[in-house]
Amino acid sequence: MSELGRHLKEARLQKGMSLDDVQEVTKIRKKYLEAIEAGDYKVLPGSFYVRAFIKTYAEAVGVNPDELMEEHGNVPAAPVESTTMETVIQKRSRRPEAERNAKWLPTVLMWTFPILIIVVIYMYASGLNKSDSATVDNTNLTNAEQDPKTAQTAKPAPGGGVSAPTASPGAGDSGEATDPTTAPTATATPAPTPSPLPQDITVTQDGKSGKTTIYKVAAPAGSAVEVKIVASGESWLEVYKGENSKGEKLAFGTTAAGDSMSYTLDSNGMYIKSGYSPATVITVNGVTLSDGKSSSRFLVELVEEDGNSTENSGNEGNAE
Image (tube, rainbow, N blue to C red; front, side):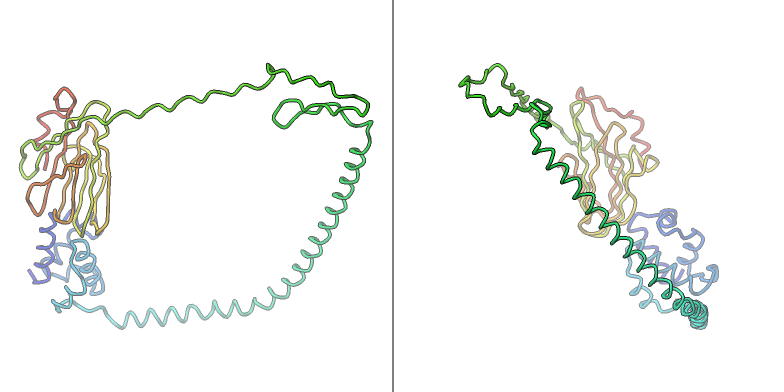
């Protein structure tokens, strides 16, 4: 095993990752990852892929790839000739395209100007037609308003009622007050329903199963239990619904400082794996989970109000 491969393997184990985990994150085949750790670069497709695969592997386990390859200078360098050849091929392939564009440019410009002139004339003519029709409509409306024969006594109001009729010139004031029974009645607005008071939720440590620390959460039926994870640095993090890593995947990858995730705990429970515990703070309803290790595994189970666990007691042995 080479020094570079040993360095990468130690970083992977420190994060609690297997080669299968690294393969899923980096999409690099497992046999190539094993070859990098063993220093057997002949297995890889070529010298270019050697450096690319090492860089991707290092980033997945939280190692600076530039410092790693500078410290271990026995990594094959990428061939210069292939890069130069690609540049020459790209330049040659772009020249015919530029020449074709230059030939079509005068033709496009020649047809653009007549089209623009036609569009301007059409818009100007459309504007004149609209102004003429608006003038005719306004004239008819003014004549209709001035003609007393066409005026109506009452018209529908915008709100759906009937507007008051206009008094005739010969009619006098009757002096009668408006009937209060015809006034609209205001609709009573229902008072807002007060939100329910928070109920008691307790979080207690309930032993271990192998490397996994088990926490049980006692909460009344229907209560929302929040599981929150806040990262202060880089760490490998996995979150699954259920009692182990075979459940539904909720989070999988490397965290960065400032990352925050929140989940609601249900009867399935939740399995959490942190590759570097000091960089992740895991709380359940405000209570911090801790096992005193640099790499932690927690199983959080929801307990009903009567004290009976929603999970079968035999499931605890299935946690990793």
